[in-house]
Length: 184
Image (cartoon, rainbow, N blue to C red; front, side):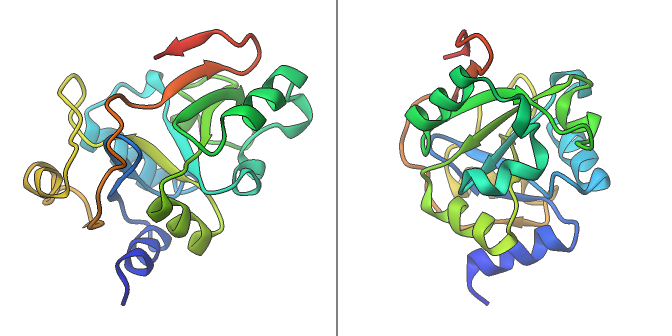
């Protein structure tokens, strides 16, 4: 089985994967699988209140998870300008989206990646992945497959072989309603 197909299979079965993104390795799972999302939060040792980003290969994959009719013209413009790319945009969440993903907010950070491996995994799944940096909260994000296997290999179900695109910092986070940069 090809590595990306294996990654998609693990996610479909409720597992947690680690995978390369534009700048760092990420931890991911099916955003609709509450127990898998809880596992990501536990592995990361992250407070639930922080919420999680979802990453996709296309805007269509994100549609069921966001409140499309509440997207402002500014938000749509930001999506058009910055996607695909390392820009996460905070948008209104679909009411059905787990509060574990949103951090008990009515918004969620989403992005369409330009990383080809992640795009292919999401295409195989037909939906986005949870995407939070692969590290313990407060520690430096992992940037190589080898480091990710060494630090998190026993905690996740599969570390997808691959490389980041070499960007130095994690995705920029933009408030889709105001245009304000929340993380650069």
